[in-house]
Image 1: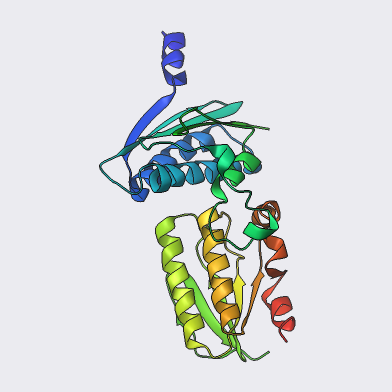
Image 2 (image 1 turned 60 degrees about the horizontal axis):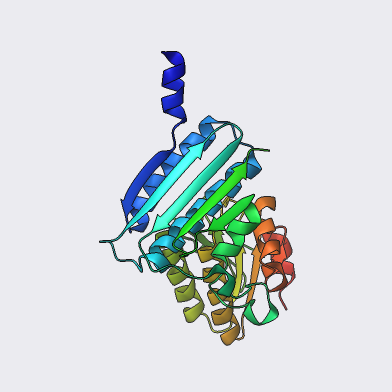
Length: 142
Length: 124
């Protein structure tokens, strides 16, 4: 019985929200509560918080273009060892390799374009699907 | 440095003046939320617009989290300050957030001091 229960608890959590920053904030809070419950290090918690915020913002701003009729799906599986987070939007996707390097001299003073770079800097794995409307991120709790 | 008694409080910003320098303490622990960022950005730009040659210190001592949107807001603010021949300094940035500045190379764009007092000393 207890092993069956623990298996259920180990299942990833799926949340579908309307494309709205306030709704995203609530979903992020629930995810971060799970991270806190698993005693992640300060550095890993900072990383997950930053990356999820950036990923959800990108999904809502660029994927849904703030169209609240569209939804964003957040799937997360938080264990003591690692956090696996997948964010999918209903947009047309993008080519991550075409995003300009925000640390290039000519882009340093542009106010946008750092979200994806920060996700990559702080997470151990960041992988986009071929369409470019889904990102899967992994952070190990080290 | 004498602290002006004119003090204006705001839920997210604490604004004081020290001589001709405006010190803005960011009161929120995290500057991630887009609505917060937009609000803070508008408020800061309003302050810059009112000043003839703005000298601003932004104190991040209370801030434990950041986002790329907040960095964008700071870059836009920096531009507005320079357009008015003013100067902007950042201070009190905690180590994890300073790392964000380093990763994005924005530590090369902004003048960053340890404390408000250190920042004020750097003004011309």
